[in-house]
Length: 77
Length: 325
Image (cartoon, rainbow over all chains, first blue to last red; front, side, top):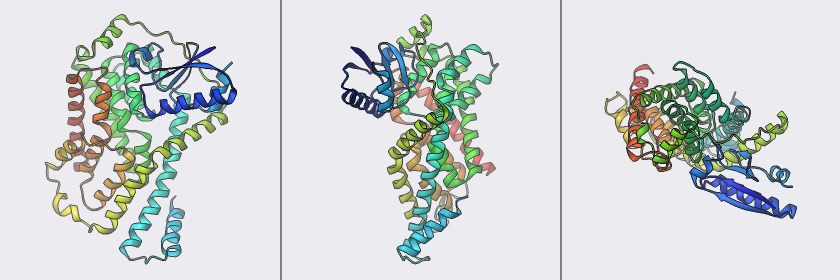
C-alpha cells in the first residue's frame, strides 16, 4: 500500500489537497495511507519551500499547488 | 484598452436598469460594474502570467542560484525581485524562510525576499493597474522591490542570527541540507497553461468577495463623498499624515483586493498619493497573522525589529511619494 503524505501548515489549500486525494482514491477504488504532516520542522526535512506538497512513498511529487484529481491518479499505482 | 467595458457598464446601468446618468445611484452603480469587470479580468490575466513564471522558474531554482553564485550585493535585489514575482501565500512564508536559511543564504537576503513577497504580489498589481493605471503600478512595484532590497541589506547588517528560534539556528549550524528529492515535472506548455489558468480561476474565485466589497465601498464613496472632501483636511501634506496612516495600517489586516479600491477613491477625493501608498504598503506588507506565523522561526524581538525596520522604510517612501508626485 502506498503512503501519501500531505505537507502543509494547515492552510486552506492543504485541506483542499487532502479532499482531492481522498476523492481520487475513492474514484480509483485504490487504497493508500494518508498522513498529514503539519509540523514545520518535519516539513522542512523534505526540503520543500512551497506548500502544500504531496509526498508519495517518501518522494516529493508535487508542491506549491492544489493538485487536480487527474494529477493524483497518475501518482497512484 | 477598456473602452468596451465602459460601454458595457453604461449600457447595463443606464440602458438595462434605466437609472439616470446624472443620479448619484447611477454614477455609483456604473463605477461598480465597470471596475468589477475590469479588475476581475486583470486579476485573471496577471495571476495566470505569474503562475506561468512560477511554473518555469520555481522558488527552489532561485535558491540554488543564490547558493551557487556570488553576486556582490546584488543578491538582495534579486531576492526582492523574486519576492515580487512569485505568487504569495502567507502560509508559505515560513517554509520559504527556513528553506532559504537552511540553504545557507544570508539572513539579510532572505529578509529581502520576505519583505517584498507580500508587498508586491500579483493581486495588488492587478488591482493597481485597474484602478491607478500602469504608471503608478510601475512606481509602486519598483518602490516595493527597492524597499525589500534596502530593508534586507539593513537587517542583514544588524547580525540578527542570534534572534532566530533555537531549532532554526541549529539547522543553520548543522547545514544538514535535506536531500533534494524533488522530481521536476515535465509537462508540455499548453497542458501547463491549462493547469495554471485553472489555478488562476481558483485564486480569483477565492478573493472575488473581497474585490466586490472593496469596490462596493469605493463605489458608494465615489458617488456620495463630495469632491476634494479629504483635500480640505489632509491635502496640504501635513507631515504627520504619513506616520499616522502607517501606524494605523500595520495592525489592520486586509488583503490587497479589499483595500485598494477604497484607497483609490480616497486619492480621487484628495488624500495625498504618498500617504495612501504608505497606508497600503503597511496594510498589505505587514500583518498580525504574518507575525504569528513567523513566531515559529524567530523570537518576538526579531519580529519586532523586522516590522520596525520595514515600517520605517514605508514611512520614508510615503514622504518621498508626497514630494515627487
